[in-house]
Image (tube, rainbow, N blue to C red; front, top):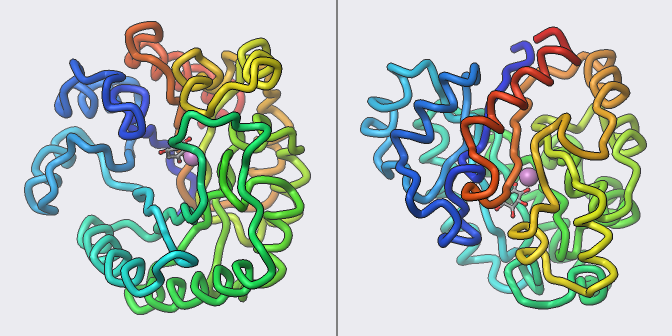
Length: 292
Ligand SMILES: O=C1C[C@@H](O)[C@H](O)[C@@H](O)C1=O
Ligand SMILES: [Co+2]
């Protein structure tokens, strides 16, 4: 597999903030993704739930499902997580995906009206042990279908910072737990995305590309705003439209021999940032930087 380019539906309709883009339809979103030059997508709440039906919309547009987010509660309720994970895995397997995006949501404040920089959770020693063992088990379940879990570090969760990502990577079996690289979350958190990419290049199996509007991010920090308020006010945008220099990041990706999806994932208010226009903008920028 070489590098494939996709775009997530979150620019059209936002599952975390359903009021954003409620006017945008599923067919509009996937048609505009294809028209903008992408060949893959992730799952949004308006997508048909049946694999055959979903394929009947995607295939004529030359799109496939790269992956989909899974909210894990390994620490809070592992048995329920396992049951839900198997259903999610089987759906993605039927869609032909090879990776499953997993993010631990126990104690997460990403969906709450709480200060994202001041109130993020910190796992206890016992919780780390539960999380790392549980993720390995989910990894084994993924392997049953020749798939892999890719862990999504995320603002407002217990795996956000460089130290937390390192702890997760060092305490899990590389054969069972891979990593998702999300440029936007790393920069929002104050991490060095190049450091993370270079250190874990051999474990990164999925990439989310988003950019940051620096002044909006600084406002979130100064005014102690929540993650979702930051999203609504435009912290994230498409690659090339913000403060991140993607050229060295692309150079690291290319020279690592990365094979897999690079997904544009830029949640912002579609009423302020027309999703089709921003998808095209991202596609033009990616072509200019990567040649792809
Ligand atoms: O991958 C992601 C999925 C979203 O639901 C999330 O909040 C977003 O920030 C993200 O990176
Ligand atoms: Co992401």
